[in-house]
Length: 301
Image 1 (tube, rainbow, N blue to C red):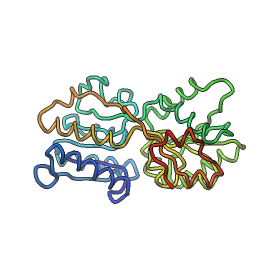
Image 2 (spheres, helix red, strand yellow):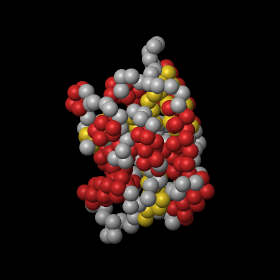
Image 3 (cartoon, rainbow, N blue to C red):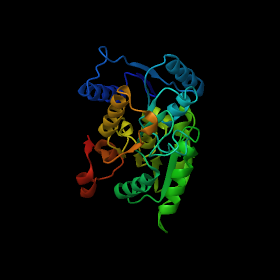
């Protein structure tokens, strides 16, 4: 089994999730170094690095390839339509061409989707609840690595925001060195600004830079993964992390025992985690309303 992921292997988020996956695989009888051999590779920061890493993973001819995001899924599927591929996050697997349908993938890929575009309205709701003065929302993403170049999420945001609600502005970030500058450009256009980050492997890899930019510019922000709140971001709302590991472990077990990946449906989150960084809130001068404290699964201090 091979893993292709976007963050360094010693990153705390990666370490925690790898440990979780190994534990769940062991519960199903698959133990690394005994009856299972696992290799891991980082996808790198550039398109060339990603293509090279994907080619190397496929060349190893593993029984299963687990990938971390839509970007890595696309890179691996460009190299193989034979080896089973399990994606751990893919926001639009049909639109991205990974599967024919959610119920019956009919190819060599399936997996988990924990950030459906419908969640975008929840992100806006949470942002305006913790920061009621928000009137302008910068939607931050890299159009080259976000599924459908962000169009699905933007359309949903525009369609579900009531009249008189916040207005949206896209904030495109394509290089780590430009993240702070682009967010500062949005902040400089007026008061009442806040940020919503779309699911995006680029911003995920640069979560610390994104969170630091939002904090420096005093912009409340909501993120699609808890990796951001763990690195200083204000708030995240996403499918439960353990649920993702559980599904991946279950599908690995099924495939290794002979199941056809083409017949394994794409799974969606059944539970969601609201994570709030109380220290980040205090730095922004925001108090946590009781309604958010009650609903939060974790409050980081």
